[in-house]
Length: 584
View 1 (tube, rainbow, N blue to C red):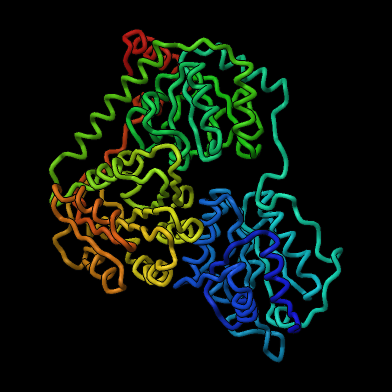
View 2 (cartoon, rainbow, N blue to C red; view 1 turned 90 degrees about the vertical axis):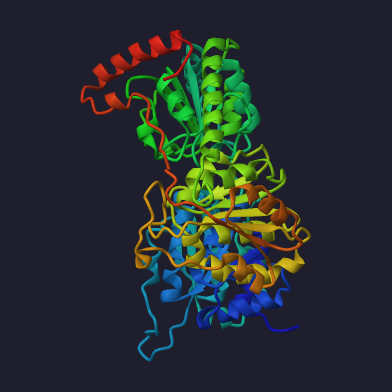
């Protein structure tokens, strides 16, 4: 039997924590661990990315799509610096990721080439846990602590592995040296329910409401059935945060869509008309679209008590798991739905859906980007996954791509970093190679890292049971990266270079479709989704199509300094509009 070294111990701990793969970029300081992963025979696998930043996005994407713990590897110096973007994505969206960073101290005075103080570098993004490994014997306990902390705090952690520790020969470790493993790695460590008094207070607020709005965030995952049941019991309308968009079936007649600048007028109107707000698992930053201060009574449910009340004043805080807490409320809230309010909400939703079709059908030069996303809605595979990048594509995704229940969609929601979609898509596809994955991105993100990561796709796709990974590139040549109603500059130097994205895919042995006529958009999607290999759909779209953010309800009152006076005027206006069975 070959002698074991510290790197083999690391592989053992990854396997013990059920890590299926680690994403990274190889280098000298991490080479012993990469070699140990190669010896592991794919359990876990090592997935080399084209860049450390995309490796960290893949690890975060893995955590987002699977609910498990993502792992990324890099070396010291600039390689470690490049991990920060993906790790901050994990931190701000509350996802568990473990970064393992190699360090090679080889100088005569203990220094190193490309040396950067790694504890300080990762001290903010991995503020829950950053530790150096000092010996191979320490590795099991140290790695267990890193994984346990990442799982418990839903945040990234970091372990620095000096190369000499990775290469140190180690004897067979005794069981007590391996630390204590959680029985369910990566899952919540306890069942969390609010106190009975808090549940009773929340039930009293909700039960006495006349016009309830429910705002659902990503924390509402796995609670869709309970949330719909509570909405029906109250006659409530629902809206979601951008991260919460996949939680509920968007075809529900009382689902107003995404709230915020990227969202829908119906969601803004829901907030303007309600007298009670229930927030479930959301840390939505679009507070300018929330009800006016003093307009509503508010109940907020969150597993992390630190998030309650940070975005909006809360009357009744409920610290607990979303599904468990909503289920507990169902047994306490009376079944007295306000059918007039529900009808008002549904009328608002109907108007928005008709307006969305009109917007997507509006002429553009050459193709309306809203049409591209709308045409995907009717073709979206029900067992698929969607990864979304940052830019104008977020607006079209939020409003025009209707997600049926069961389709998992993820994006860099809080950090808002461009270049996440294709790394996310790779992570999702590697985890479920029998399911189709669609990445939605602009030409800026494609040039940033997408062209390179298509090489990663070309390396893996032939092993997939379902080869469909479709990459949509909205090619609008807009250098700002957001499009949105500005006329494209006539100066070629001010516009993004036009790249043959579909042609590049074909050069890599993938499929590519370029569409620049609106009547061919549906056929392009059909071709891509029927292809026998991954496909790039390059849609040449009009950068001048306006983003058209919805106006917050009662926008004219939001600058009133006296919140009490503003709230009184809001209530007067709401009573008038609800009496007319309509929302302004």
